[in-house]
Length: 480
Ligand code: NAP
Image 1 (cartoon, rainbow, N blue to C red):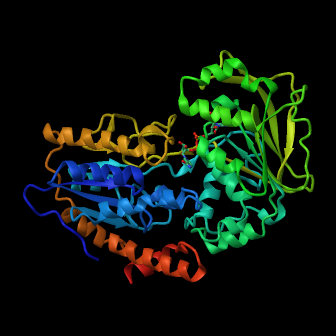
Image 2 (image 1 turned 180 degrees about the vertical axis):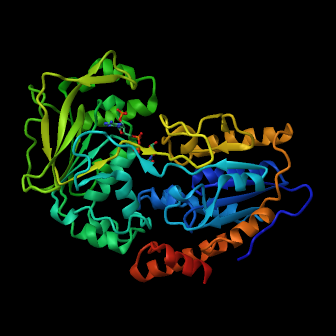
């Protein structure tokens, strides 16, 4: 395994923990703005790119192409990559058996940037959430993206006609699209063969997206909604009260161009609720369809009538908006309305990802972020944070360019002000610790071998790539 070590007297070293967009953009900023810095990227999985590899939808390969830019950054001689190394403690180690405590890393490097993203998800905290069939959207996303932890998930697609997705963000739309687009639309992508086989058997033909607030407050973006509305062979209805697009709502969206355009699109797709506030018993013609249902909040999940722990329905409280129309407008339960049961065999909870604490670093459990000021971790020296772990789980890949630049600029300013101390040797100091790890450590050359192997396997199947989804196999290919 080739390692680039920090040797020159002027050289100083920064460790970046994580290898998704927040990590690579931080590394990029540091490397471009300081000719003496050496940046080492540590990733707990053997392979790089985090949410780009395991979060971006497979039919959005153009978005995944950002990895080409990341590969250029990693190819820079002053950038090292150490895959299959979990920084933290055993509790957060996941698939990796190599552990590097954060204090060791901080001793070895002048500064450490935490950019580990959000590896968990938020729960609803309502009864029945543990029923089989109630799953995190993150699990489904990981599954169709070939994440090693998700390969064996079974979503019961072969026995399920109706699915619900709780949440109105882009992840919810990604899940609805993958559930309904038909397997042929995914065959040439990087969806692994095991997931294609399960999707081919899927009986899901009705997906309902559930939003607790109204259309004006939807979190998804116009490109994603339009794409869902244009899915071939899939009918879409956007169900909301008749006054959901009142002049006051339209007026409030006017100042924000993106919001105005998405409201206009939603208006075109709008199917007003019946006078009693119900959806009037939406007709079922047996075809595939997606209902985007606003002002419904899950209050529980009920088991199927067949008994056991299978999901039968999501129980919904009707909500009403209070106050003047705005994106921040709140809702309250419409107390008079009866709880509605929406029959479904699968419910994906898509209410946001959640970051996890890194052992040895402070963590705000309430907000699930590392407390910081402009990327400087509060109360700590030479410790920084970037991306979702810094600001919470929102924003697209490019949001991380500015976010990471802010963190990297703070780090460089602290270095210029003499606040970082010497640093303990960077790669040279960490090398013996890595050599003592029980499992192989993967460098970027190792990833390039896996990349080539995946593309070759994919070419045989007529697809972009067939991912290696097993950690041991990743290590065999990368280190072989
Ligand atoms: P998100 O955009 O924050 O959406 C979360 C949704 O969950 C919101 O509609 C929110 O409603 C709802 N929610 C939260 N708590 C709830 C509760 N207790 N009950 C019911 N609903 C609840 O999160 P995301 O979809 O996970 O996406 C994360 C980020 O990744 C976003 O910035 C997204 O744009 C980005 N992303 C982008 C793409 C793309 O560009 N194609 C694809 C995937 C993800 P409230 O507003 O009422 O809280």
